[in-house]
Image 1 (cartoon, rainbow over the protein chains, first blue to last red):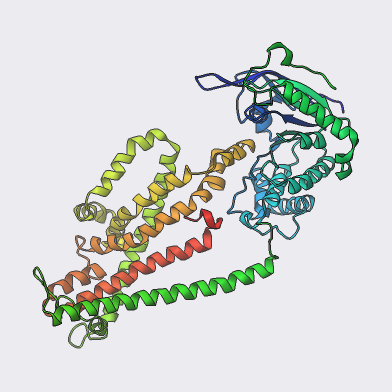
Image 2 (image 1 turned 120 degrees about the vertical axis):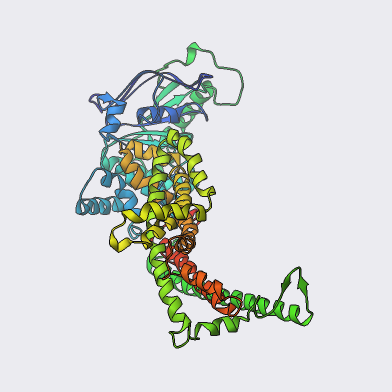
Length: 275
Length: 299
């Protein structure tokens, strides 16, 4: 995987409010084309904030954000990324097909082109027969698949996913993990994925970025060298467990356990190490 | 909700369920009607047989005509050798309905536009809302003569006189629509706003693709209040506008004969109520057809 990075963060810090709560601090990260990068860390470590900074939904207090070679704002205006939230955030007055078509309507695609693209996406996320259903008639997992199809509708180079499967049960989550990998391979897009599940991060990613407790910093980056394509057997491999353990250890060092002692300053900053 | 029935079965299920629900509604309507009818007659019977006096009030044919007498009055000639009362009232109701419908449409549009405007500017909202509230605290009877004097000379011939009444009806319509439109437009899930931002959508698109559809249940709740209010506005508006052809004119007319023939006024009130209910039902039907929301999100 080569080429100039799709996402490039340089010394990014975000402080909220007058009280100056620091959500993320001094983040340096490059995401290369075609990578699947997970951000993992304890609750409130700013991983979602970081994702929203990449999407220009939140402005960093300082630092530089480059997406697709331009400012995050310009990338958003050029519709360079699609985003999926923890909840599907579907419009319940729209059918599945119309929810998926929403970004295409905003891009002024004509009706025939929209219909063709929506049919493709419904196949991709395996929701055949549900195009005319309304969101409240679908299960949580199906709703989230609609949300993924919507994010992919205009074929963005970058997919931002903020704990997309966090609200689903374990079995649905594992099935959608497999589907997401298939979609990732089929679409060739780059994915930045926020999660607090270690096994999900290891299973999906080419790299796992471990963040420390607030203020969120990069505690470690773990390269996941599991072979592609991955499937249910991947979860049984010894290397999978080694990597899960490695990520868990890095999380502990980053202060994941609920000890109230602040971690030492120096040891956490930008540790670009691999196990 | 893991199990989702195939579309065909589900729509059939929904249909039979809908028919049953509609049947229950109609049944309930008549049950309540029968109850009210019985209560009226029972109260009158008890009050008459026991010679009950409530202050100055005495139950008799003048104060509480029998319901069957009121209904029968509809099928009596309205005057010697004239058309039946129900024919006269039907024409009057149609005339008033025209005023009310135009007033309702006007008021709903103005109310919606004001709601959109105020929802988009906190400054305008703080500045203008007190005056909008003030406009509703002035009794319509005090405003109506001014509206007639101001509006009438400017109306084209087709709208002469009744156009001013429509404006008065609009005056009663717009306020709830404004308040609920404002509330509805600002009630959207902040994550949907993030989503629209991620699509770099214009505020025009955010308004029409997100805020307005999300506000529809709120707007319809207001329209359901406003629809009967527009009928009231039209009836009251006919008085200062000196319009004889509507229900307002009929009420004024039958008021004068109340002592000798109270049932005519009661019958007119019945028709006026029916008109208000019809307006409400039209809005309800429109809501059913237009608003597609999760059951828990329907206001």
